[in-house]
Image 1 (cartoon, helix red, strand yellow):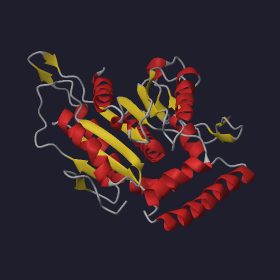
Image 2 (tube, helix red, strand yellow; image 1 turned 90 degrees about the vertical axis):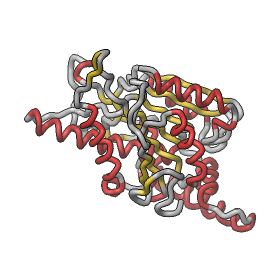
Image 3 (cartoon, helix red, strand yellow; image 1 turned 180 degrees about the horizontal axis):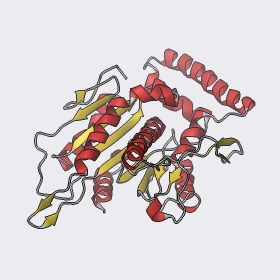
Image 4 (cartoon, helix red, strand yellow; image 1 turned 90 degrees about the horizontal axis):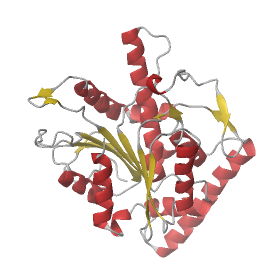
Length: 333
């Protein structure tokens, strides 16, 4: 992805962050969400992202759309590295949260609080979304601590609903090579052949290095973090700890990893995936949804399965069905 490139109608803010602000912010539809946050797949071309953003603008003409694109730097970056990368996005979301806390009324009564809706694409978008949620939790918890003088602030719920599209996978060298190759390699057959070989060596080395050192690889990490819940006080008689730096658990591979609190367990999440995806196995996504629902305590987990669509190309199988599902999901309360 070229630096500073974004779909038509978006104002470029940083190398990877851009925003679409509608010409009007008023709507006769009081339930219409005013802010969408889209975390696109790694190295996505703006013209491909635009197929989604154009439809969002059509369906929600008075909504603001915050687009966070991802590069290899974002996918492989540490938590500290990602703080300045996402600072502008955090500020925009915080400003929106302040606006929605202002009570509003009409002749028919109170207007429902505006929603913040998060649409995540592939592992690249999921990695960025994890960082985004972690930073928002830390920021909002700090603000809560200052305002209430609490020494133990808890994470706050930011997003109203989530869509996780074609994510997450499990570590798989062949699938990783396809993902990186599709994003980074030229069309020349010889160069692609050489590039795929080099990528395979690089990916294999990374997975094996983590295995030999007993460390969690980046794919397992993003997968675990997506299913790292927190529970607000109103949903549990005993509050969960907010500082988990010294608390650990075992991941699905038996490695000792930090026990983190990243996603509100009450926020509904929809997994959308395809059985023909050659980059992210549909079984990996299905298993993650089951874990979220049956093991990790997420309260509303649903799935929408396509049969023939390629990776991050679900509308190509059935455009009307895809957008009907998306619009219906966002419209629920």
